[in-house]
Length: 372
Image 1: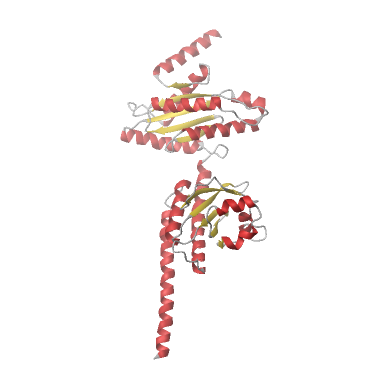
Image 2: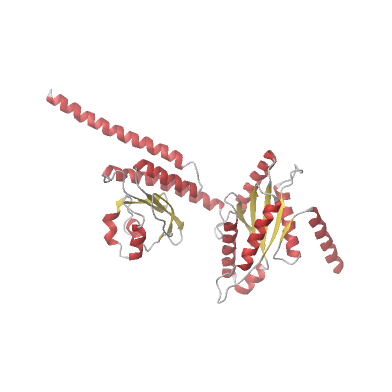
């Protein structure tokens, strides 16, 4: 009987362990569904961290995500559970944290205890930066095509130590998270202009079509702004294309910082930019356009011995609800007409589209032809 009881007890323990593993796999599947519900990076990292906190019952967590693939720069995107705020931290290819997981001879694909590597971090600044995140576990975020970031997890809420099964489970979670981040990065590459980090022309057109349809369906307001950097060709000829690229990047950054999260800023082509403003009247859009114009006018652009300055011209238009057959092309055209009027009227200004603007432009063209 003792042998039977012992055998039954062993089987029961094995069965309980098997059930726990099944439960963990089910939890991972549910997490995958939640994480893969978005390709927007901000929402994705938030979902990953809160899922992580709920699964492992930890005090705090921080996620670093690949920001510059060319130079292997990973930036902290979000932290939860930390009592103190901290300045932005980066992990680069020169950081020990990066090297231990991605050395030339070895690519570590496992979560590690921070205390096991702490004494090997020689750079005091790197050590201080990581320590302020209250790290207990560090796990790499390995995607199919490379390293996409790091998860830094704090202590367990109950004060207990992580066991080996939990460490394995953390890495499995990290692997699934990495695939989601990789997918988000691939999607971003498809819709973003690489230089300016604004949306590209094709995505801009697709979103404008969607917003026009929504505007028609719900009778809502929709405005469009088109910007052009004044005398940009002459600027490039004088200072070179590398300096021109700096101007494009800085200008894009100002535009992005000046609009709402619900707006859609894009590089329309060359030195021209566009911003779609849902639920916005032409008067409110004009206020935004003027804010951007004034910020750019005063902005010192780096790259030379002395700061450089540029200006922009802008056209603003509102989707006409009374014209049911109005298309994307028509909408962009009237914003461009207002932009063209700004350029013909001395540049460094914003113009609201109206039928009167169209008539004034026709008169300008006539006068120009008569002058010739």
